[in-house]
Length: 439
Image 1 (cartoon, rainbow, N blue to C red):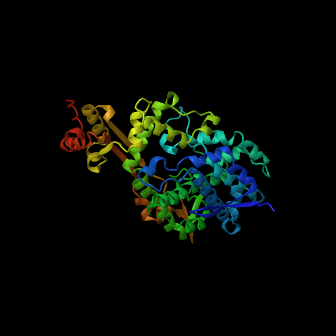
Image 2 (cartoon, rainbow, N blue to C red):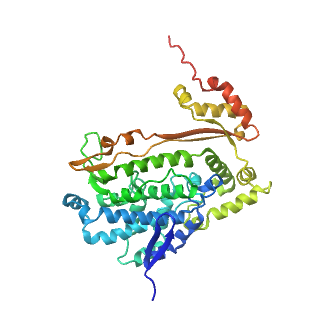
Image 3 (cartoon, helix red, strand yellow):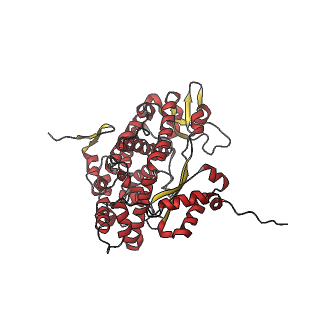
């Protein structure tokens, strides 16, 4: 007797289940390609266990999105007022549950080789979300959506997979915005929940762990508290019962620590920079193709072969950069963002970079600047006597640091000398020019 429900073992969620119709999406070329896209690019060169792929992450996002949907739409968790304002009859819940699952499953199919590391090498106006949309709307997935019972509308899947921020040409109802928020929301998006748990597991660090079971069980659709200064006052949003506040705080801290300790690890970041240098030289016109079939043929595997071939053959284009990656001859950190320097000169990193370029030449120096990075800590919390803003009940959320990075690297042949030179000339390099006397 054929199986209609299929189980996939997962190190984070134990089992992820799909029915036979959903499995057609899993088996499609756009989704199977994710088996060959590393979740964290070249991070495995720093954290050897970080070899996991977008494939299993996307399965995890679907699993968590389903759990959240089932919790927030439970009869006991929806007041009559919220149900009426959502404008989504309960008889439509099965349809939207399926749309949510498929949007969650496909939310990352537009990622380039090495995920975010290479995203800036797309033509102007393109990002991985736009490629995701193109794939959702193209064959073979379009036929799969139409064959489902009931048929799924491509536009609905696109809305939930991208959210209002990336699908600005589409009109979202309150209900659709809430569902998109379940996947890609800044505060409680399950995309972020899964990658924190999964990246923490595979890198071997404890920073990304939090009680996601408790957090999900306390999520609710709530009315944003009235606030004359808030644009979203009175609207509906994902929030949580007061009992889940500590889990939410742990989520926000986990995100901060994973960004600061893993995502922006300086050696991990310099490998991204060397990779970009390599791809700019080897790709046609220095950018990736946005043509669907070409995108499906391009994965980490092909790029890794190119890297290894170029690393061992000085005559190949990109040899210098490939050699730095494959043979671990990356540039070394010679300057890191220093709060004391920034207080004197907000562009201290830029001045150090320019000074080193002048001394050693631009080919010998690289700069990595990102941030400041912050996420929304403001969401509705349901207390016994009403709904309030999270920042009114949590001192910790107000104090989660904003993370930013500004590192300068130099070729390993001059790194020690450059580091010493920066230390000896630091005050002169970062000193702001005195303002001219107008009198």
